[in-house]
Image 1 (cartoon, rainbow, N blue to C red):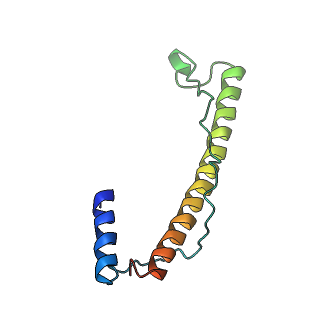
Image 2 (cartoon, rainbow, N blue to C red; image 1 turned 90 degrees about the horizontal axis):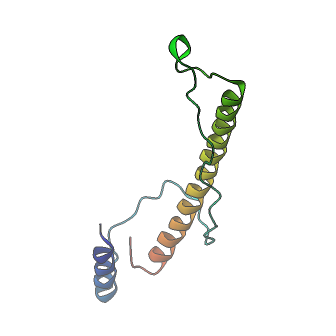
Length: 106
């Protein structure tokens, strides 16, 4: 549904006094704080290394260590993205709750 359609639906519902279709909220936590992002871009690199029989393996300990560090950063970033997603879900739930309280949506 486009933003235009959402605004049109809100205006229609408000003018007729009838709420829009009901939302099913299976995630119940809601808050009104839209937190700053906790995730950051992964800056590291993953080294391919190796040639011949060792192709695809790490050719040096430094390349191996760089890759291990980068994988750790990726894990940290993934966990931060889950925090950010949870924050957005809570904020969105709060918006739905407010719209329901005003009778704009069901």
